Image 1 (tube, rainbow, N blue to C red):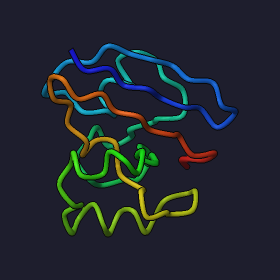
Image 2: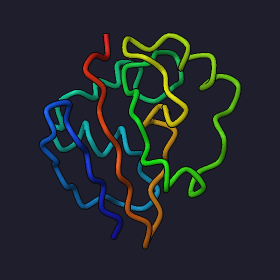
Image 3: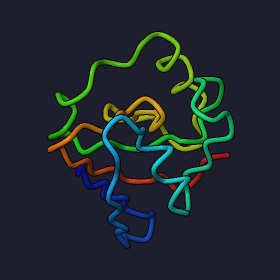
Length: 106
């Protein structure tokens, strides 16, 4: 069972047991993680699930597709090299995920 480590802007970390096949965004929403809004429900039509993925884990996921890349240009907090939309990060068995939530989503 993968674990997702959500670091809040103030530094507090919330650890959630996830389900393989679910997204980091869906796991956050289901478990009341503050700071991940997910307004569009994961359809790549908003940027309210923006996170900073641990740079050491970037190779665990494919590069952003064009639609995600476009939406990352619309984030409320600054885009970084490790910025991702958490709806596009799918959990896999045996792979834990560490993300930091930006100060603003909308």
